[in-house]
Image (cartoon, rainbow, N blue to C red; front, side, top):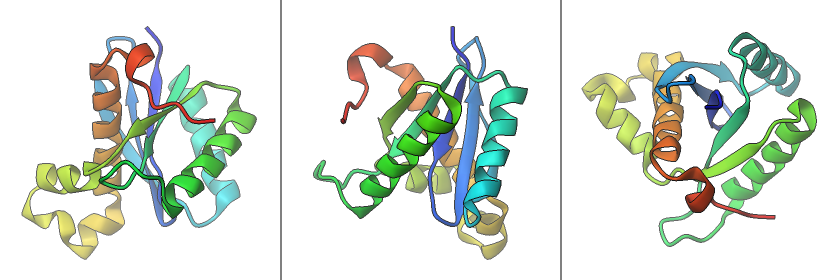
Length: 145
C-alpha cells in the first residue's frame, strides 16, 4: 500500500497528515504558507523523510459542488506539486472538513493560540486523508483536468 501525504491547503497555513502502509492517517503539523519556497522545502523534507508515494489534497468545493476562487488556487498548487515532486496528486472533497476538525479539537479549537499552532489545519488534513482512504480511491476520486 502506498504512503500518503494529506494536505489541507491554505494561504496562511498548510495542514499536513500522513498515512503509512497500514492506511492509518495521523496529523503531522502545519507549515506556514506565506513563503512559497520555504513551504515547498518543508514539503520536500516530509516527502523524503516519510517516503511519500502519493499526495492527497483537500479540494474546496462550494456546498452545491461548484468550483470557486479557492479551488482555482488549489488547482494551481496541484500543478506546482506535480512539477516539483513528480508524485500522483489526488483531489479529495474537503467540504466541512475544517468545521469537523474544530469539533474534533473541542471548544478551544477557535482560540488564537490553537489556530496559530496549526492543530486545526493538521487535523483537517488528517480528516481529508482518512476520508480519501476510506473510499475505493480509484472509483471515487475527484477528477479535474
